[in-house]
Image (cartoon, rainbow, N blue to C red; front, side, top):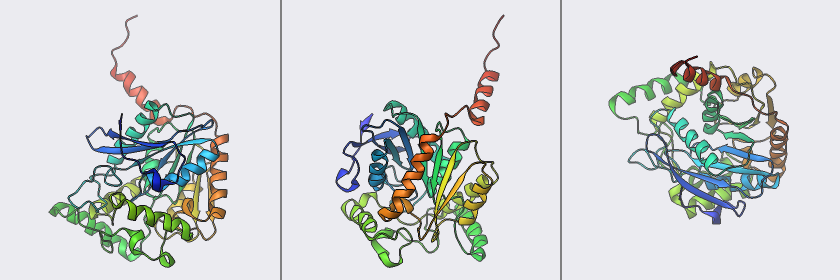
Length: 335
């Protein structure tokens, strides 16, 4: 694998961080990063949110390393140092949402190539929670899954939802899917939104951590989503809402001051997921993994407790279905 740039000076993660370039099946180049170190309990496959990048999770990787876990994460296509998908490099864009599953396949292949310690567990934040739910439904080889403010629905006024659907659908057919969704622009959120009114974190130190990264390496930054991304996100969250949850240990953390994703969709999913656990974090905003030490420590503790006690995963229904299809397609054995 070819090494990719990795900005350890702003990541503030364990000392063993590194990144590699990998090509997705459709040829898009993505960047995968890992903190391996001395990890005797397994690996966290960390699915970041929209606009995020590997270095932003350096402190989370440090928290996991202190609890015995390695971390592997990614710059999704269209963000971080992975290939941008339109002429406007600040536009958060995707062709179809299922393209992100090609990046998931790259993560799994990289984890295998690096011999990341097993068992593997999923932690998925925001948009990564949407990608991650689809991945575990489709048979992602993890033993348990945790979600932080997962994007299983997008928070918006009820009166605006029909407009969001119609506008994002319509512009795709006139070649304007790349333009920004209403109310968004090319600016990096943390460089334009004062700490006092930000929707991400209540911790000044963590917000400054994000600002420092954005100032040091502006090429990591991203602006608002495109209308194409909005349409695809609405389609995928609606499609996922009709899928049953996988048979897998799960916990989800949700801040009581969440303003970006839809808490109602999260509560509905968890209430119908046998054995799943929803942890409401008092005064938490969208990024409870990046809040005060007093808020973050219990969250990492309960996640790792679930990881530690998760039973070995058996074959998923998706993997059983794939095996059956493969067997059906193979020539019958001669007796």
